[in-house]
Length: 121
Image (tube, rainbow, N blue to C red; front, side):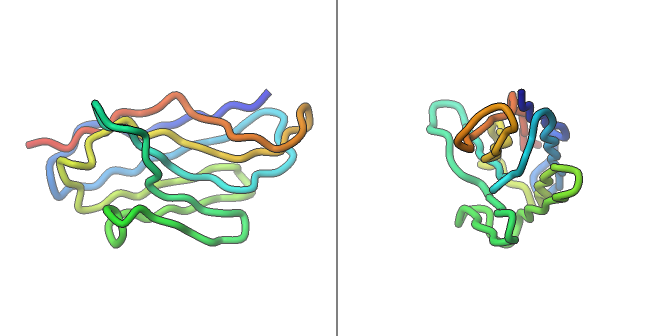
């Protein structure tokens, strides 16, 4: 099957930086888009950033200018560079990818297990 594995979360002070990475593995034929969502306590999961296979990006207004999403198509990885972090960025961050698998049709969304990001002094 397909798996998404995230890494890079942790505790950082306001104004600091963190880098999240996500690697997709398994029976992957192609990946349409990869991105990141986050969910803070008591809130709904929200889109942070997404990057299509063609290179188009979409960012949440709250992270524009601070976060950068990038992707390595050859390695099936997506990275989220987070700068100028704020306490309100505290959340569990989830990797998301729309993947066409060798074993299933049509393409579907897959999710990582989530990684905690805490911004606090």
